[in-house]
Image (tube, rainbow, N blue to C red; front, side):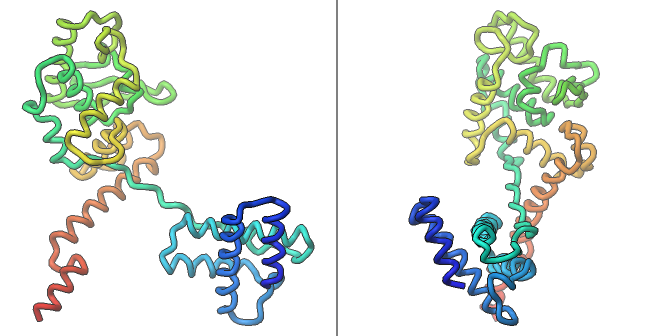
Length: 307
């Protein structure tokens, strides 16, 4: 089996002119596979190896804690090797062809904790100048409604219905949805509108305007959010979308149904909304580990020592 690996590596090095580092990486992956194949029953060759052996190798890597990225890279090396072997008539079939690698885990949405949002939105945290009044209104609108950046930028004065405590939002593919809001947001937006009309010469019906009185751009809103979130959190990502994640997480943590959150966020598929259930479970797990006397290894070890 080593002979064919050497031929393949020469092909990579001299015909495809791959770097020494790349060739070495392919060689390491293939020899790792050969080591695994050697643990299987029977005398295996490149010709007799089947997809079950490849899947067994993949599962063994998963059992050892390898990431999906690492496993898929090694499968890719084996796949490339077999294509080479087929092209040179060294084998008659490719056992990797129908083997699918593990799916990469999607990162959980980042969000601010409730106490961080409370600190950020505390009225004493802000001055009474137009810049701060506008920034607080923008952040509270994101947090209270869960709307997207493009949806906030597109809001007009007529989008706010104070009588019904409703916000009319134009979402993706021009789909309109109505989002309820509370008294706090109503008071904050009203205060902002008064300040805006007193100090800025607005030239459009836009709800949020910049210092020149024209509708704020997505980049300007993003900058406002990033600047102010950095004051209360250490998240690497401090975008308006983080506030949308924070809204969804807060709703689910306070017993809102998944379908209700789906409608408020404007998700077409509930599968998109379900990612937030993983976030809330992760939070629940951390609470459990901290609070329960047998919730983590450290607690178990301390109990053992006390015996």
